[in-house]
Image (cartoon, rainbow, N blue to C red; front, side, top):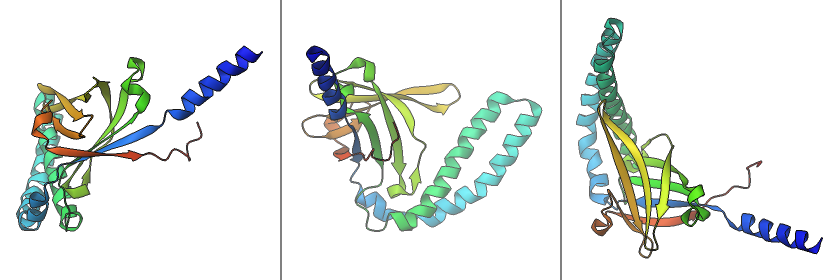
Length: 199
């Protein structure tokens, strides 16, 4: 009985210690953030003009059964819609902002030492918070010195690339495509409030 109780105590202590954390990484590009006020009007007008035309092309191609071409137009349409939303919101969000792009990764710290817990949540944030993309699941792996997050991104129907974001565990400097030395991003660790979770 004492052995069972001891195992339960150890299991509870271990499971309660493991908490999800947020790795919030920003590019520190205040110059780009400040330039939005000059770029926004032209970008907004350009996107606003392109969106209706692309929607029309998309409908025509779907009606004709040209699915590959329709997928290409759909990707272009999404890019212009993101540009329109991002630059419209950035006129407010980028005021006095110290960064333009950010990456957030939420993961359980046990995933750094347990290969069976290698899932993480990733959210891309651009335009100083003016455009927040849908959260996706990415793969987490690590070495004693670097944390890696990997996922696939579609640029074109036949161009799907493996993306890797690497974080130096000592400095929390980070970069895309394993270019930690470039240190384009600087990360901070933030606690995640899970008190509202039912399970």
